[in-house]
Amino acid sequence: MFEWMTGVIEQGGYPGIALLMLVENVFPPIPSELIMPMAGFQAARGELHVVPVILAGSLGSWAGAVLWYWVGRRIGTDGLKRLAARHGRWLTLSPGEVDTARGWFRRHCGKAVFLGRLVPSVRTLISVPAGMAPMALPAFLLYSAAGTLLWTAALGGAGYALEARFQEVAGWVDPVSNVVVGALVLGYLYRVLTFRSRAAR
Image 1: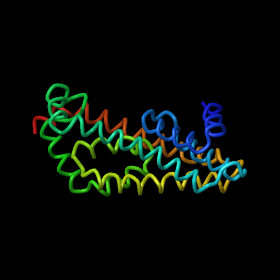
Image 2: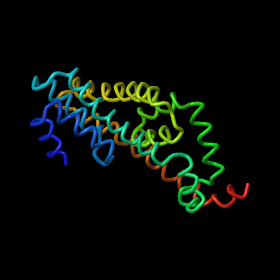
Image 3: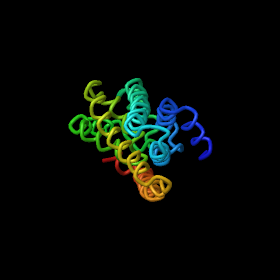
């Protein structure tokens, strides 16, 4: 995968970076933590310019976030409540909890989207509840763009500054990603195991 991503960046330039970041949002195993530092490294070598690299990466990532927003919008709160009524244990949600979660998200949607776009693993999924809420599209676009630009600028800038040692960025971010994923899995398992008692309350 590493060689494939390198080839896409070298041959595709800025559109290739945008495409990789779009795919990263749709298919999370392709890591932005490696794509953007690699693109920043290419800019440090003089083959690209760092500002367009960051803008291209941000645009691709932002487009992926908008795609997931529309998925959430399509499902909607009512659709999720129907799924919760049938498959609540595995979704770890009861119909009542869907309403509670929707109320919380509508109160904190701007902060949730902005900060969510800065957290590994969460950044891909935060757009779905935004669409379900539904969060107003202009506000979603603004907060999502701000978080996305900050994330890609940090990773691309780190790759540009570290040059040949750009893989150190991924080496630093990967453990953080693993901790986040581990915490999400443990949280999910806890909610599955305690679902019946929560639903009864």
